[in-house]
Length: 276
Image (cartoon, rainbow, N blue to C red):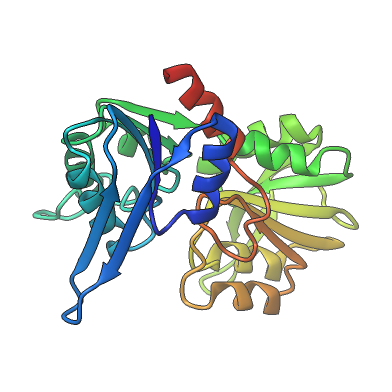
């Protein structure tokens, strides 16, 4: 068995290969002058592990090309960040359910699919062979021993934050919006008074950072950090977060950014070892 590292996940792929004791397959990736992409996997094997996050359309195309290059082998697809998962149903008549289309493409090649904190149960439901790993313990372990309050940006993410807080051994709460009048909405924790406390806002994805920024503007606390599994950080989001008073942003390496100081390689490697 060999491991193919996709161009979106070079560091995480290397970490997984080392922890699983897998040989890294030699690959070639390039772009033609007209913008078309090219992928080559040199050497054959009966089974491959492919590690490639989907944080862009280009990432998805490269994944499909890698799959085609090794289509005569059994494939374990490790997709740490599953892009397109937020479009998990048709919100308007005639919309494509993006994750359903992506799931069909991936599972037409892969025998098993491993991901980390896919955005919703609805998104996961479009896969037939999905293993969804939970990285909230990785975030929780990082904060263990600190006197903090972990805050979910909304009720929908509370269960995730609860799991992180259990590993951190800290209190947790979620933000509740209260409308004062037609123009004024305040955001406060539901139960816990965070005055003079250090707060960490925890979520699965930070994309534009809007939710965290809004919370930072209205929470009366000593300091605010932000932690997430997937650091999409689109549209200059990181600068916006710091400008809003967020003292620190951390994430895992499902998407490889400067703030991705935590690794999910242990989680994924444990699962791969179980499968092989």
